[in-house]
Amino acid sequence: MAATEYDFVITLRRKSDATVDAISQLMLFFTLVFSGIELFQAKYLSWYLVLLMFLLLGYWIFLRLQLQKKQAIYYRMALALAACCWFVQPKGQWMAGLFIIAALLERQVKFPREIAFGYDEVVINSFPKKRYAWSDFKQVIMKDRLLTLDFANNKLFQDQVEPNPNELAEARLENEFNRFVQERLAEVKS
Image 1: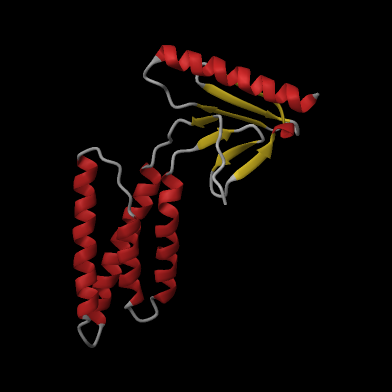
Image 2: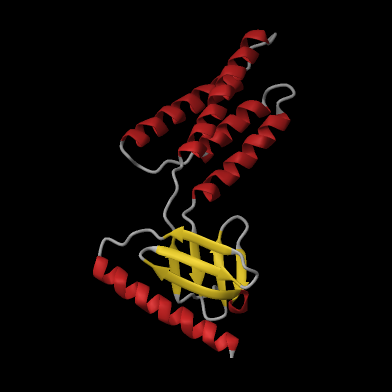
């Protein structure tokens, strides 16, 4: 399937990832605690579990150091290691499944929200992607870094756009975008 090209891709202002990061860290903490309890209650020593716990703890420390350097961090590998910790525990397979799902969804949740405007459609990059025809809109406008999508069914979407460091380029882009959108809406309505 060929990739679709879009005339404008607008990146919306990023929301804080603090909640997702806090939940991920809480999941890692509980994994280490319950894995430690399992080690002390088990009749035999599971070297797999010990190794996985040390790998998980080491990777978590690595992520904390990356965070101090102000780098973007993703917990998906740590959550996958935590899933392995749960998998080797008796009756922990269902928890392993939950952690695998969390690992798969974590990056998508942190992905910057974008709206792509093409000749035929408008696509909101979310999970799952939402596609709209131009006929679904009454009005679309960007003004002062605020994007407004006024749907034909009276639904309204407004969000701030990620700022551009070059204000002159930002104003030019805003004008070009609004002109493109008005042309598309006029073509659809005629």
